[in-house]
Length: 298
Image (cartoon, rainbow, N blue to C red; front, side, top):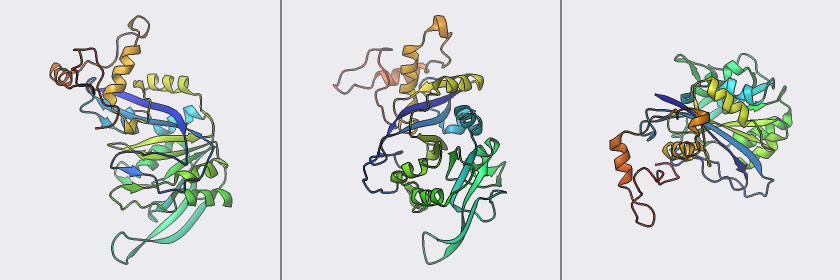
């Protein structure tokens, strides 16, 4: 099986956030307030057997790279913090900067369940478990996101985080989790805001910053050290098809300098099935000469 890291690095307009992923997650409906463009680096992962990626498992964890190590490579020695709007009172961080108990209404009926709004310092080793909310089947804190470069939780930061996640509705079939219009206010208090958007089989890391991070070389090094193929995407990986991104990467691959392409070709049956598909103008692609046709996720 091939392990891969998928990266997109693009501008982001909080007033026009666009979709996050078909059928899985959307932004909380935000006021269309003009905002200076930000930057968003999205990192997902996948494991698959060949270039068709038809059997791909998708989500950052499938890259095989530790999430804390990834953030540590992007922001060396920067302190980390985590935050949660409706945490489980039975699974809280050992040290809390903010702890607010409240009763969260259930999706049906008039019943409520205890919840804790919290902000806490976070070590790199805690990032991956707090993304999943468990360690080897045992519950642990589940974060809504992470803050880079934060050493304390000021009242202004807490208010900005409430605007970001305070209206989330996780019980809906299509999750509404974050308010994009609140991101600029959060970034006034930290170097980067890391949100967890959903891919098919797990969350991705979406790093929001005021300016480009310019760490492509560092990420490429980390992927190679981890044995993962670094696959660039033009749009966030949770919105795209891996087979097309792999095809584009192979087009740019230089065997003389880069070595053998690390992704096995698709099986003949899969490749022939793709050849039979037609292009937008009705013509049939030449065998071996056309990319997978759709940009978006199936």
